View 1: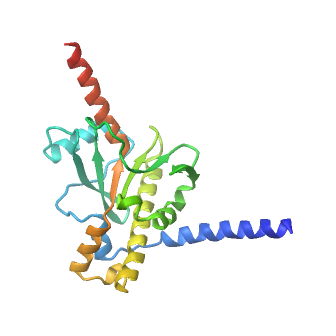
View 2: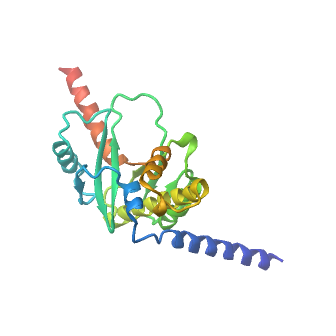
View 3: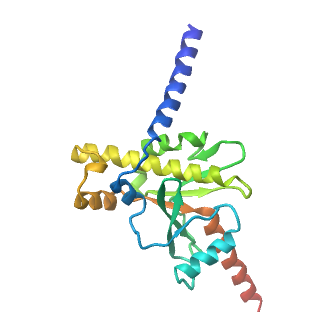
Length: 224
C-alpha cells in the first residue's frame, strides 16, 4: 500500500513537470501575442546583460528616455529575449512608505527560486504563473530579484518563461470569454483583453539601486 501511494505521488510530480514544460512551448509568437508582451513599439529596445553594471544601464535608460528624476515614476522599456521583445518596468519607490503589492520571484544560486512562500524549479514558473493569474485584486505585478553574479541566461530564462505563463493564462481567458484563442482575436477585442488583464514585469535590483542612491543623497544633504 505504501509503495502504491509513493508511485502515484511520483507520477503526479512527473506529470506536473511535463505539463509545465509543455506549456512553455509557445514559439513562434503570433502578432497578437507579441502585442501582449510589448504593446508600445515606440519604446526603446535594449539587449544588455541584466546582471552586469546596473548603474551604467540606469544611466543609459535615463538618457534614452530623457528622464531627469528616476524616483517615484515608472521607467518602462523593451528588451530582447530570444525570439521576442518583452516590456520591462522599474518602479523606484524612493518616497514610498507603505507596502507595495508585488508577486515576487527571488532567484538564487541553488537552481531554485522563491515564489510566494515556497521554493520551485525555475523551469516551472510558467505553470505556476498561469495557474495563479490573475493575481489578487488583479494587481498583476511581478517583481524579479537576483544575487549579483548569477548567470545572465538564468535570469533571462526566468523572465522569458514568466512571459509564457502570462501568454498561456490570457489564452485560457480568451477561450473562456470569447471562445477563440488570443491569436484569433481582432484588434478591438485584443486591446480590451490587454487592458482588463495587464502585466507589469519589475526589475527589483534596478529599483533598489535607484532607491539606495536616493537615500544616500538624502543623508548627505541632511548633514550639509
